[in-house]
Image 1 (cartoon, rainbow, N blue to C red):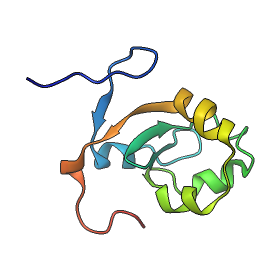
Image 2 (cartoon, rainbow, N blue to C red; image 1 turned 90 degrees about the vertical axis):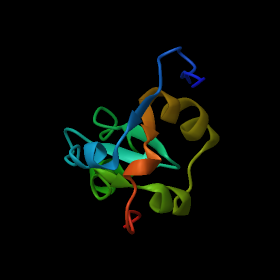
Image 3 (cartoon, one colour; image 1 turned 60 degrees about the vertical axis):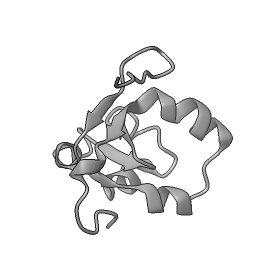
Length: 100
């Protein structure tokens, strides 16, 4: 039996392929992967303390390393990030060095 995982708000978690994330690579349509979670940050670019340029550099890509290297508040991690989580990365879609 496959268990269905849910977000805190009871939405079913979507398993997204890296190729799909890669299609959302502009400031207006900006998805990133952080720690195997997929976030749609399209509506957050202007609010992000680093601004849209910082987020835009990782649009459509894995932003885990950059995220871990930056200082993020407890509020950012526990309150802000869950609002923008739209799924998890499908591990079968990972090939090669996808962290760049």
